[in-house]
Image (cartoon, rainbow, N blue to C red):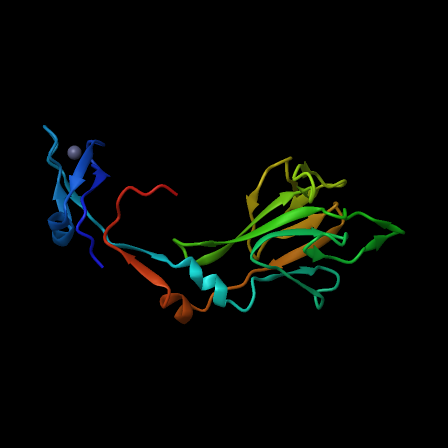
Length: 200
Ligand SMILES: [Zn+2]
């Protein structure tokens, strides 16, 4: 899959832009043309994964309450509002502690995306949720903690299977991420010609 196009890379030595032609890509390297530099820049091949893979996945992971780990709350691709209300995508039980529930109706948002560079699902958590009508961000009443640290308003952090998500300071959940089968992932690998300036 080679494309007969020119493109620009940044010289690894002098930091100036160099024009890359198809012949340079075939050779796998390019010598910097800028005066006083002349550095050889390697054009490393790279690959990505086709995000269409998510359409064929059987699941996107789940949350398990620390006290009742047999009860799994499945996640979906995209935004998962977690809470006790009927507009939450992940509707959890009203866990009572001395008669009181600390989880809001729309408590926090766990967003599942596909990282095309690593081929893994990515999980990002933030406190509160967008109001279904106004789309305004509404924080939870009692806050959201990851491994004991409270999330700040509008802060969004990556969470993994080792992290403990605590809703309202009381109810702890563990994320069980979905791991994509490596053999399946390999079939969605997309080779790139070389590694141009990419910004992540
Ligand atoms: Zn240079």
